[in-house]
Picture 1 (tube, rainbow over the protein chains, first blue to last red):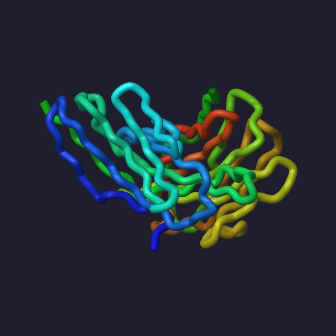
Picture 2: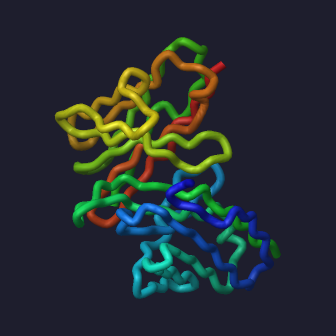
Length: 114
Length: 112
């Protein structure tokens, strides 16, 4: 079983739609979670960190449920420029020390069309 | 933030040869890493490049195949040794700052 698993996608949505991605993780030692965005033939870039209390950044909302080992990303009012691969990422650490070793999910492809 | 550059950006190599990839960060960072992204797949961590000591490899990756150097806090190299077509992939280095982990643009390697 992969340590981080995501919805396989792909998701094809019209502009203005709301889309949600889900992710589960198996390694309870992963203490920090992130959503990265990767455009075609580009490197991944941090979209947002994910906190248990939930956090919002403009049209993006991320949520972490530690009890269910579940992470989500909600995108509201989708734009054409949101088309990309979204990667769910866990940061392995132990004893409160981050090792910076990121574990990536397989990614979910989002295409927003006019 | 950190700006990371990699050289070469791409290469086509013959099987049995080796390629060294360079990674340069525009600021001093404690943690640097090397990842591999195989075609159509997500990123897999190869190793942590430790400054002043041997790299720490993840399961499935060994030093003889992927020797890594980290001579200072801004630079690292990854060598892909004795290449085979299965090594065709994108190799990315990353650097961790206090705020986030930044990735280089990647080196696209094709082994024929």
